[in-house]
Structures are given as structure tokens and as C-alpha cells.
Image (cartoon, rainbow, N blue to C red):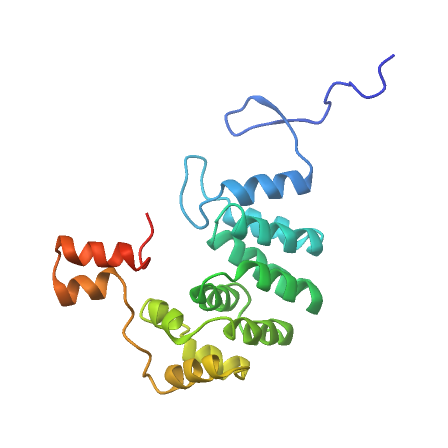
Length: 216
């Protein structure tokens, strides 16, 4: 008699009313996280609230790893920010540091995470979260901050410095932090500013491509 090759008896009914196989909580959380367009209506409705509730009752070490995987392997931003906030709320200091470090790739990941936490759980921000974000702020220079500064509508980089009390660890970040506080960040060299200055010309686009300031 077969010991392992058994029929799956965990059956349920899907949203079309047909028989389907039920997933465990971890499998369900992974499936939802990697296929969701967070807070956007889809054919079967928005499952964002269900995803958050499932994450909140899950093993926080698993959620922290999933947040990192979603951001760094699958390049999913919003859901990785949400999962990092869940870990910051329920996971404790070490897991919070792991999740936030894994999710922050661009400077605006920082402002998105803090805005997300505020929307989900309100203030105050957890101390472990503030400490790790202060660490993440030291990974970027003034040009990196300038690139995303104008796109931060709620919590800005200046707010992040005030909330986390981040201190620069080298001359590069000291200049960046001073520019943020004094509103003297340089004008970013991107397609918006270059075309505004030089016009929508072949030469302007070639300059952008050759400087690696735009991707494919």
C-alpha cells in the first residue's frame, strides 16, 4: 500500500462554486503575496485585507523572509512593504531589522514603508523600525534622495530624519542629510529634468541612455 502517494482530501469550494484543493496557511500566504496587486480591484475582488490578516497570524520569521523574497526576487514593492510593516508590528527587533533591510532597495522604499505603517497601525512607529530605517538612510547619497524626493507626497525624507533621528556615518551621507534638511538636494539627472532642459530630442535621449540614468 502506498504510504506517500495519497489523494489530497483537503477540499474546498472556490469562488466559482467548483471543488478545489485547500492550501495550508503558509502556501496560501505565499500565493496571495506573489500574485496580488495590493489594494487594487481584481476579477475576484480585492484580497488585501485577507492577506494582512493571514500574515498577522503567521510565523513572523516566515513573513520576514517572504517580504524579502517578494521585493528582491519577484520585484514586488507594495506587498513587500505591507509584509515588512506586519513584521515591524508583531515580529520584534531582530525580525524587523531583517525584513526592512531586505525590502529597502530604493530610497522611496523607506518613505513607502513608513507611510504604509502609519496607514495600517497609526503612530508611534516601533523603535526597532526607526533604528533600522536610520541604518537604511545611510545607504544612499544625495543624488539618490533627489531622484525620489519630489515623488514623496506624505512622509518625506526630511520627516524620516526627524522621526528616526538618523545620524550620518560618513561624509557622503552627512552631505545628503544636510541637503535634505535644508531643502538643497541637487536637481536629479533623469528623463524628466533632461527633457525639460534640452527638449525631447534624439541627443537628449542618447545622453540619458549613455549615462545609465534610465533603464530599458
